[in-house]
Length: 299
Image (cartoon, helix red, strand yellow):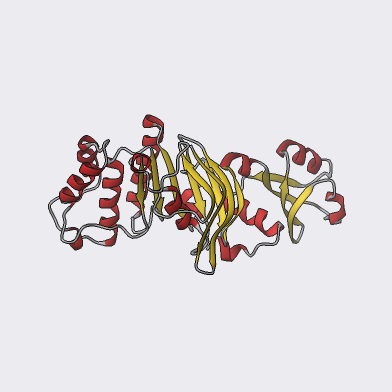
């Protein structure tokens, strides 16, 4: 389990993380969402022990990762820009990882070479960005980590490889209890992968929770009337957003779906339908209600 308590990190006069507190349970896929510079990458580097905190505390299995080789051996961190030794090939990098990670597994490595069609003897500098990303994934996954940390995991991968990566991640979680943390500025990439999503903005956590609970509490309702009632009629509902087009009302309502639709039907509409919003829509509605400029957070 990863626990951060009042965690703070500064770079000169800039506060990258501002006394944040969160818990990441074992065996889940946890998403970190936010714009560039929001603090996502800093948090990953603190978890993996690359950085030392300036305030508060962050622990992995009850211990700090900084200057702790035993904890670091459980963590595979895939940064947004993969690093390889100069002029090395994938096989040479695998041998290097094997010398550093006690749980490195050549069986996993050889299997992943059948999934990602890369030449292990070719110089990594000759690979495209997407191919280098695949090579870094092979190395990270071959360490058989308890914790897999990925910064912009899907960057540089085509649609097919993104699906392959998602399947590999889910397989590791289900079969080996791996905990996966994925940082991304694109919420749509995480919607079908993550169990929990945390939104970070300017070093602060502004939303954090399980995807199903977040999505299940907000509903899009489309309802048509022969004569549209005054909006005050809906005061008994928690209406987060309302738009009207002719005789059609589009409402975003927070609460229990059955209770919402029961009330709507008492108004004798011509038509009423409840539509499940996307995860991105849920966050947009939630953040707009509390006054955040969503475009600067999720873009």
